Length: 304
Image (cartoon, rainbow, N blue to C red; front, side, top):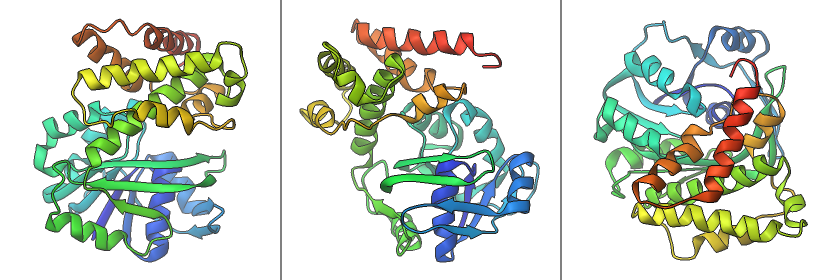
């Protein structure tokens, strides 16, 4: 199976690298700067599961090569619209598109542009970052990638993808209820990123404050109420399970981006939920505070 991974950052580079390590046919769609860096230094990954270096195949959006069978989108949301334009020449009649972005709004956009049948569900759980030399640093033990048909069907193409992913040194797991898993992650990432960026701290420090635990609970409950109003397939009480899973050392990738002075996914994550809250006439006070904090940060950082 010919696989195109859009982006070679922490997420795309890690999972793509693991597939390459296994021997799969992987190509990365990158920008000129990253292409030059990869050609000079290779793709280097540091992980508790083993460090490795590979020489990846790369292309630019302007290159013309045959269509790919599977395209994995691993960009940040603020690069998403451009990424859809970039992959268009590489989408053929039988191409399957798997997005790994946080949130949900991108699923509708992909279906709108490329048709419903081309898009499958996907999500990942990994702590990873990329240093100034382009090395991907895998932090912690989680390196999970879930995927599946949005309909929940066990199709021939999903079985082919499952076969391609099998035997890789990462947890590539087919999920026949991928929509539920994606909404569950959306709830979790919105709450975790919202609280940690609001207080510029990891969860443990917030919990120790007098009202910290109550605020965390209120944020997760508010987000869950919006998602349920949308009639999304989430479990009863999942927000409380997620709150109980929050460990003291948990931060968020959005917090790390903010600490670096980089762009954040405020509109794609919290902003989209606020639109749903307005649609269902939910006040969403906590989410408004979180979103306003993120947008204030964006307005204060030059170039965002």
